[in-house]
Image 1 (cartoon, rainbow, N blue to C red):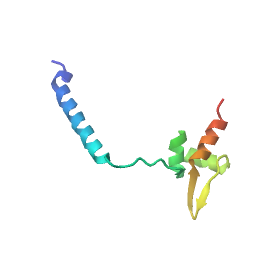
Image 2: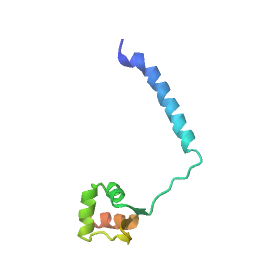
Image 3: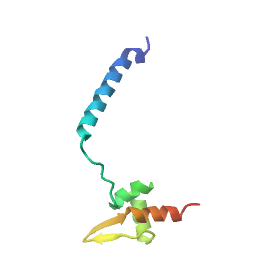
Image 4: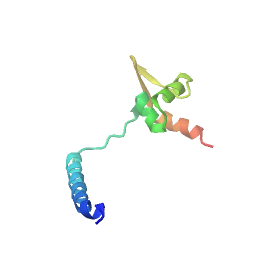
Length: 87
């Protein structure tokens, strides 16, 4: 007897219950699409590490918004940067 035959129905039930719990938890919440990212978030958005993103910012290849010690990057500026590097 294969493992899937033994555990398959149990895993299916766990998946269904988990999905139901997640849907209930998220019900009524609005998805927020951020217009501004932190350095780490911006890196994730364009597929770079935080250090890689910092290097791009130090080269002034992408504009930043600085409020106190915090640095923010506009989503539209990241999109513009990526389009400008399309080959």
